[in-house]
Image 1 (cartoon, rainbow, N blue to C red):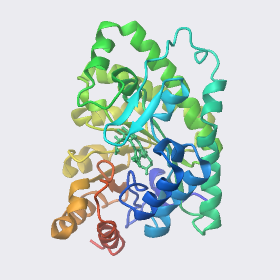
Image 2: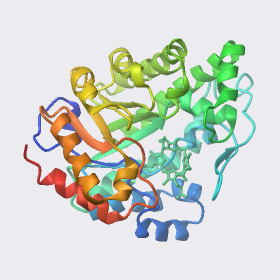
Image 3: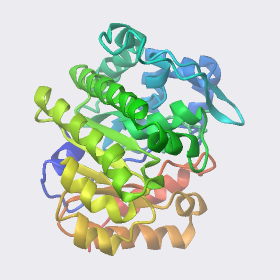
Length: 349
Ligand code: CP3
């Protein structure tokens, strides 16, 4: 059954907005750390449908968020395309050499890609059934993917960096090869999202975490255009499923991104002034965000103040989803999440 997040993205009005947090399943929760230790590595967790189901449900049981988000990672796509991937405890993700896409079987035939991702698809079905079984039948289930630009950043730079300069240079100096990579990613991401919806996700989110490193013309070419194609491809198969876009760091380009891609919801990062979002972005589509994860971690009066300010400014007419402006930090006390939820649930302007 579609829930409050779905209805909000469809433009239904609620006085109290739906709420979920990016990275709501994760290391700040003791129960997550326990399951992760049993599963072994982070990737073992992602590729085990039963463990992935368990950790997806943990924050729902504890906090009753309005939506669950599939537990996985954006980097399973490069992995399923044949690129080596590991998560080292202190250095984040490390990728192997970029596979040769010209000779790759994936361009014509994506069978193997989907076989590699079958544990993720199984996790989606299993999460949906488990939510229903535990009495969360109106909790929405969000599927997700990284966007082509952000995945290309990790595939070419091969680790997290602050500017993704290798990728940026390739996109300019070797545009033909880069554009071929973006096309392959656009195709497989569309299929990946469609299959997650087939298996029970009723909303999907596209994470473009590194869109903020691009100047406007390149942002149009590598962020807006491919995202627009993905939105069109997903809508052919699933016209009713809302799609949230999160072009982190897009700044002055948020507005153009929302208008051009025609996404149903727009994730805004911590730097977007909420007065600006209310005036210029909410008239285009519902916005989602943008509490600062460090304010959440710090807690106290400032957390109360910021939470209320966001509610006062953005939940006036209901085109709003309460969330963070980025993923929850691993050192966040779970009580601070409870503090925010209490303010939201008791909210009256
Ligand atoms: O939101 C959720 O609860 C769903 C699960 C989810 C994870 N990663 C779990 C995860 C989602 C939606 C992501 C998306 C993701 N992954 C993004 C886009 C959003 C963003 O943060 O900008 C990116 C860039 C990644 C790549 C990634 N995965 C990095 C850079 C890291 C290491 C940094 C870190 O926090 O350690 C990860 C690891 C990761 N993904 C963890 C989790 C819970 C921590 C792994 C662990 O348990 O050790």
